[in-house]
Length: 291
Image (cartoon, rainbow, N blue to C red; front, top):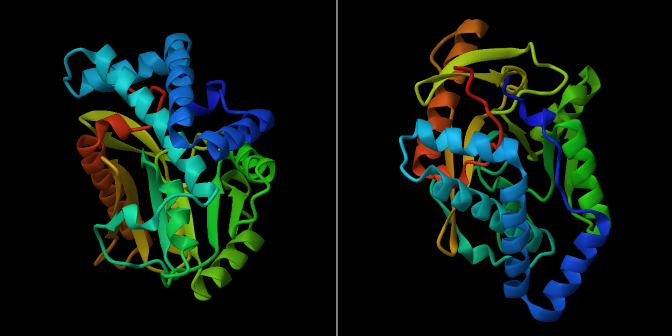
């Protein structure tokens, strides 16, 4: 039986590894860090059987030949994406490397993210004093990921205007607070393509890459409840550039259930489009396909 993403063991870096990585970067620069990432990622590729099998199945669905090769490239891209994330969080990523492929809407908007690309590195844009972007970002993560994220910031002694919330514990109080922050021009990021470990029954089924897949409905309902502009967003790497794609959700329906259905269809269509465009940056290393 295929495992969900939250049933797979995490192989994240500990505090000492993060601090060591920071020292190596400060002393020797980016190249040694990427070399280390290459060997670590290769080791993970060889030992993480469940993740590798899920990756191979994904490329078989895309009718790719030499699936093992494509899977390895996907793993390597993920390793490099982690390095990019690390560099962005210590403030060394050049904002000029970003290209906005959609409207500049980073005020009072709710962004439904995907696990295509590396949306976390957008913090570089929010911290750039030359750009008129909101300085505080509100991110909803799965509980264990939320703890790891906060631990990551604390390990590197980073003081960033980013508040991380566990997605499973969204209360009425949290909703009111987030709504107030959105009114003040802050933004919210919440993923729409991973089912919560504590809400596996709150899903909707959709056709994704011609296969049945379950996606969380809670993210979409929460976004609509905020009554602010809702956007889908992807940040993908092309060469040295990071291309940021945004697409606003619009519905002409009036009934809540019909608007929600439109949002489900629009999100899956957006996710599929960019999964096909950047298959080697599709970082869902678990078997999300139900057939």
